[in-house]
Image 1: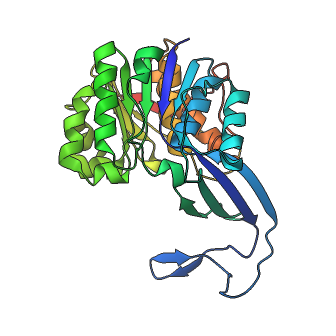
Image 2: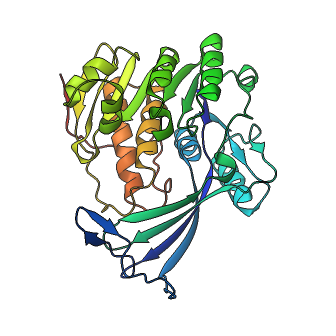
Image 3: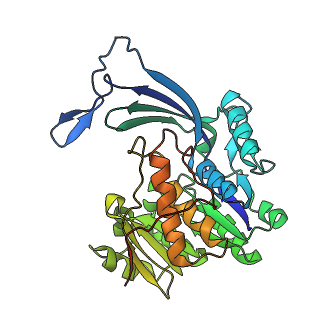
Length: 321
């Protein structure tokens, strides 16, 4: 068991699920939300209140794996914030380092989900997860974590730098999954990679950071910035290296159909760290990460399908190169 800090966003996810009115309508190379006309009322088949946000999703993965987990992020004293705290308490996540923000509401996403295709459109109010400058890296001195998993902080590189430097100072290993707003500041972002032990991005994100077209080319350049580098590629699997071993991996086959892809990336990244932190091999940690992501997309909600560390896994396509 390890002590892990999950630093990132916390949201309430409100799912509006329907089997016919939200069917995508194609227009050229794009698609729009289906049979919803402005000025009309639409009957929805199902509504579900969940919690999400990358910080919450990863914290739940670590907790279900049996680790000691602390979540650091912002919420408000409102019903959405109450649901998030209740969920984390139930999962065994330490909520004592949550910051409660006044004059804003807890971040909320409305997920419009077509039950037939699994396609979804997400309307997000960031609220208390819009900014992170109020968070204090000095909390790490008190927590003394073995690892810190950090997802996007909405482009707040100053806060990321403060936390990364503190983690480096106290010997905490850092895993980082940057987001769109961090990637938009490429030059300054890449200066922070010297503090990152494990970097995870998807293929298009990797192409924004380093030269290359193929996964191998991208990984060849990306590994110069982090001891361990992972590049995911959707249905094509991905590629990863820890400096000593390099693997090309496919998808973990699940019996469940894909119902909702929300949280798949969080499930993969946090699943990898959760398994590695228990002393498992690099290869097996990639398999667990893939299995965690496959289980999440087979259920509605960003974290309902998260598996625990005792889940028995079957073989998947993975090759050492």
